[in-house]
Image (cartoon, rainbow, N blue to C red; front, side, top):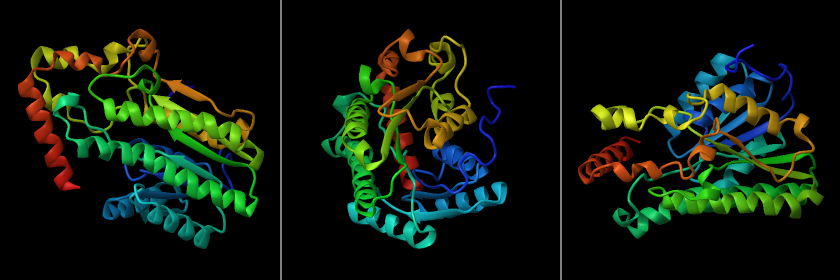
Length: 294
């Protein structure tokens, strides 16, 4: 077998209802696809509802499963409560929350406005808090057991990293929340775990942004002892295991899946020290253009 193949048996998530925040694209979409293939009913959320609806249709066509798209900005608690209400109305109950929604600015910290810093903290840390609190309170009130929260963090949640300081601070908070609630809410039948992915490329800007020798220097695979980046199915396999009943004795853990990257050089983005100022200007312009198109 190959590492890109599917790991669990076809009915491993049959009967499960899973909510994936940030499920409209990238790794959230990849995990949602595999959950559906394993028999789960999946709700995906994001702020871009048109993109979300297209993703849901695509995933249903590919898997034959049920994928419910619900627009939600996780920074707003009332919107999270509405997601929970719609999921319960459609499926009767919810078994798993996967906090995947995130945002990041790759930038020298002195170039960030206070608002930019707040945006990342609000999406990553406050958003995870909002979802966890809403779903957790529901599970406690309804006395539903065998429920799981899986949080997507990052290796620089514990090492820190330059050039992604708001994300590092927010992800560190999410990791602390994961471990804290794993202890406090275990008595209610909840499990809390986290995944810290290394480089799992989605559609990015680095190839276009970095010319010549810089493109070679910032090749993410060269930072990984295994000399490759991750495949989306590898992450989906791990996530599916952690939300399945097979992981019922794992609680409060963060599992790193990065090919040994962080052990080789702590601080995933510290290498950006060598980017010249004019390229930061280009990157900022590209990020602003991307935000306008969302």
